[in-house]
Image 1 (tube, rainbow, N blue to C red):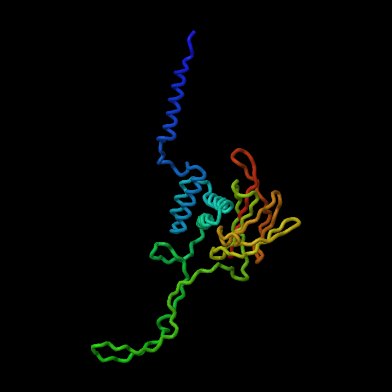
Image 2 (image 1 turned 180 degrees about the vertical axis):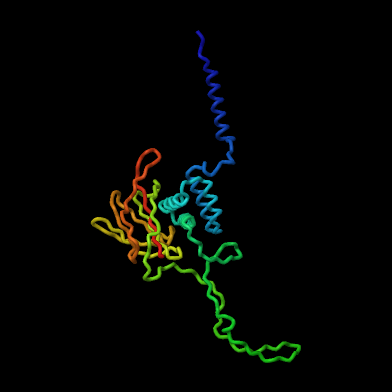
Length: 295
């Protein structure tokens, strides 16, 4: 009777283990030409954060859009907003800037897709970073009093000419920008209503964005939300890291709401959390995004 070749089996197992250790730990194969769309979820988030930081420094929206296209997201705006929400929900104070940059890039892409022109004027500084400033200019040259000068004889030492004082000539002065406020008496229109099926957002999240006529976000806007048997108010600007004109409210599933700005606006009727499906066939409650804008 032949004995089982245990020594051969043991040699094979040792060789297999050494081969795996060498290929996985000692000299793993380096992948250096993979597409960003093949990245793991957490690396994709880091990639978006880097794109948003680059856009915040340069303001180059076409380049940011081209870089985001490499990720292959179905909706880049929704992906950026969802990541900003996740960063805000789980980050400490040092991470709030990343959420702000992600939300700013999402807003710029959304406005560009809707054909909103860019109206912000910038001044180029020596450091290469665009600085936004409002300039106040002095009166035209025709309004500045003429200077009377006395003739001077040519001498070896130049004389100081006596001149009339110039009255209040303003020079260009950069002033800080202020938070935009709406003009009184102008109602707001409901410019957009979107359904968001993002499992990373809280179930039934209502997002509201309030813009001025020149597409600047407005803080301190009161929003009235009503349902059968109750009503509440909430305000924009309480989460500045997501935008001065941003506000959100957690809706109750299967409840129907109406939403309106307290200053006067179109009424968003029949607002209820949508039912969304997961890739494995499950269901969850999605979110609604409303955009109000002054005409």
